[in-house]
Image (cartoon, rainbow, N blue to C red; front, side):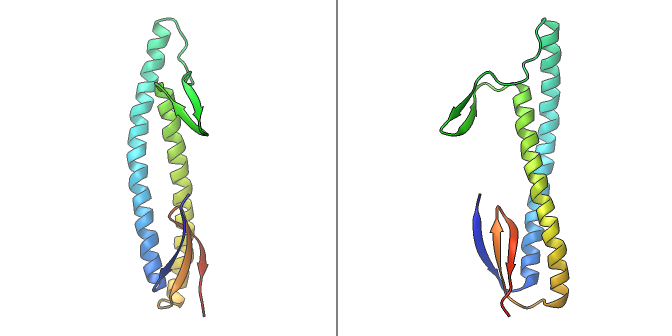
Amino acid sequence: MVTEIVEFKSIGELMEYVKREFENVRKLMEKYHGELEEAEARASAYERIMKVVGREAVTGSHQEINFFGLRVIIGPTPMDEVEALRQIILKLNEKMSGLQKVKRAVELLVQETPVISIRVVIIDEVPQKLIIKI
């Protein structure tokens, strides 16, 4: 998690930041949705092959270890890849929702006070707190 305080010269500048971040997240979502479709196709093929050979498809990795608090999967199954991509997409959806909320709030502020400088607490590229000095 990256936390920082950034100063913007105007609310319009903050709005541009939010729009850029939103666009970056949108592009990542497209990329990972494409990868998810491919991974789901591989997982489906894997399940069919395992049924043909008389075994149930392995739904979880048997080679998952905890390494200094980090999950390490050795030789992931296609289902492991699908799970990882779904988790990424879920987090990106949450980030996009946060950016949309900020965008709505900033749109209202930019109409009323377009030239004031503003400090913003940003966590994981999403503004969380606006600090406006009067």
